[in-house]
Length: 407
Image 1 (tube, helix red, strand yellow):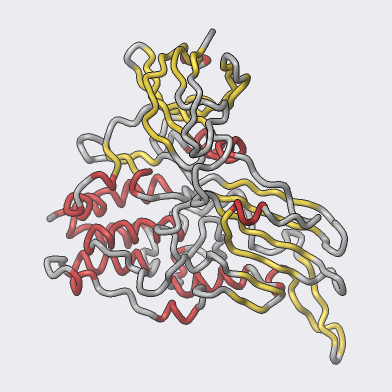
Image 2 (cartoon, one colour):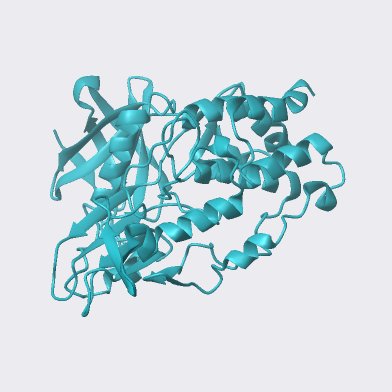
C-alpha cells in the first residue's frame, strides 16, 4: 500500500511525517480501506483528515512533530523533598508545556510528545467513545512512503454541526434541551475539553456527540539529588471554558454535597499543599511530624472518574458556554485575566499565584438578564446554578430545565 505525501514549507510546524497533506489509500484494519479525501482541520498539535470508505466517512487524526503555536498543552507538576527534609513539596497547577520543558533539573520528567497526547485521547475514546457517541475505530501506526511509520487515531465521522457554529439564540434554546443527555454522557468520567467545537449537534438537534477529549499524560521520576521524586502531568484543555477548576482536579466529595464553586476551588488549592500530601501530626510537645500518604495526596492524576455525575470542571464548562450564549460575554472575564489555576504555585503550605487568588471568587457573576434584558428568570437560574456548581443531581438539573424545555 502506498500513500502519496507532499512536502510542507509553511514554517508553522510540521506534520509528524513532515508533510503538508496526505493523500491516497488509508488502511482501516478490520474496517477495510478508505480514500483520504482531504484535510479538514489544522490544529495546534494535530491535523484531521476526512476518510471515505465506499460512502462511509471517518475522521483521521495525526500528530504534528511540534506545536504550531505556544498556545497548546499545559503542565502541572509536583516535586517532593528538598535539601533539609523529604517532606518539602513544591507544586505548580499549570504552565505552558513548552516553558515547562525548558526546566532541565534532574528531577524533571522528560517532555511529552504529540504522539503520547494522541495516544491518551485514543485510550479515552476507546473506553468512553460509545457513550459519547464518538465512534472510536482504531489507534495504530501506518507506513507512509518516504516518511516511515506514523501514529493515527481513526473515529467515525460526526454528521452534524459544532455547537459554536450555531447562532447564540439557537445555542440558548438548545443547551437546556441537551443538558439531560450531557449529564448522562459525562457521568462517571471526565471529558476535560468541552468547548463549542467539541460538541457536535445532530442535524435534528435532539442529540449531541462529544469529540476530542482533553489528553492527560502523567510522568513520574524517582529520587534525583535532593529531590525524592517529581510528577509532571501534561494536559490539553481550553482555559476559557475551564477558568477556575483545571480538568485534572480530584474532587473530594460528590456534587450532591452542595459545595459552591469557591469551596471546590479552595479544595483544589488545598490538594496542592504539603498538609494534604503529608498530613501533620503532633510528635511531641513542640514537634510536628508528617505522615506521607501512600497516594501522595490528591493533586495529580491522569485518570479522573466521578460516581454517576459530571466532573465539576465539565459542569462548569457547560455553564460558561450557556452564559456566553445568553449574554455574549464570559462570566469570569471581570475576575481573571488568566485562568485561576494557571501560574498557581505552592511551596509547602504557602500559596502564590498572581491572578489566582481566592478572594476573586467573591466577585459575583453578573446576572445574565442584567446584560441581556430578554433573558428569562428560568434562564438566569439555570446559568447561575451551573456556574456555582449548584446542579447537585440529575433531578435538580431536570427541575431547572423543565420550564425552558417546555417553552
